[in-house]
Amino acid sequence: QGSETPNEPTPPAGKKIVLGFAQVGAESGWRTANTESIKEAAAAAGIELKFSDAQQKQENQIKAIRSFIQQKVDVIAFSPVVESGWETVLQEAKEAGIPVILTDRAIDSEDESLYVSFIGSDFVEEGRRAGRWLLEQFKDATEPVNIVELQGTTGSAPAIDRKAGFEEVIKENPNLKIIASQTGDFTRAKGKEVMQSFLQAHKDIDVLYAHNDDMGLGAIQAIEAAGLVPGKDIIIITVDAVRDGMQAAADGKINFIVECNPLLGPQLMDAVKAVVEGKEVPKRIVTEEGTFTSEEAKAALPDRKY
Ligand code: GYE
Image 1 (cartoon, helix red, strand yellow):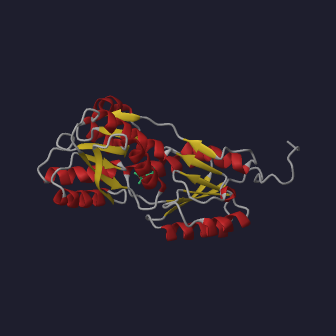
Image 2 (image 1 turned 90 degrees about the horizontal axis):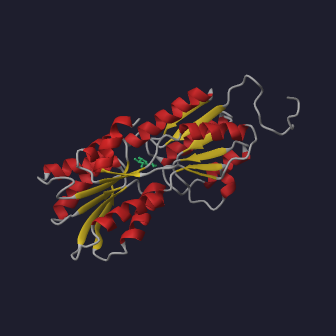
Image 3 (image 1 turned 90 degrees about the vertical axis):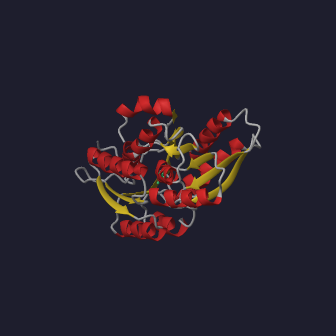
């Protein structure tokens, strides 16, 4: 003690660190697990959490961030619903001297001084993993393989990147064709609705690539209602590997899941503490994850936490 430099923003001993967190919403099983992880980790770390749910609307997230600035929280963290349009509000946080940590989703700003760190998955790599599995499955195909794609929220980092990574890999085989691609906004209801319209418009769908489990699960309902067998008549690939998705994979309805880890809470709290203590935090923290076939999902399910 006694050796602290005067400009270290360490709060006085006994004062809790206050973290303002602006969450995307409650659109998916992934998001629910992510929210729980953040709440639990904050409590465990003795950090006071001010939590706001933006119901998938950027304007609500911006409002929440402005309110955190007014309340003079120590750190602001958020998962940006879409990639663009954050400069103004993040500039306001910067001017107020409040450090910002991005979790889960990235922003597309060139100005890296607007945030201290970005903690989350490599979504392009997730898309590639989905593509590589499909490429291998159809490596001997001599006829066109018709793929339909359910995209995540338009303009969001995971939707943009999961599409890009997947396309990058499958273009290696010209037989693999995306014949329809539309947003299902990462929700079950939308996934079902859009899959219904895909099924009406196209009689010859071979593969569904859904950017998350929930949209895939909604689509499975539409596929079954159309009298088709998910996982057999239509090969299904999803991303996330949350419990319901893993169960569908274990049941053979989803053929391949790319994992995206929602348990970002502990890493976020470590970063928050480090930032408040004036320590160096890596600009990019990538979460580690894998993939699951139906067999692997069956084996992993009993030990899954979410
Ligand atoms: O894959 C999806 C959720 O940003 C990684 O958002 C997250 C995505 C996740 O709604 O289920």
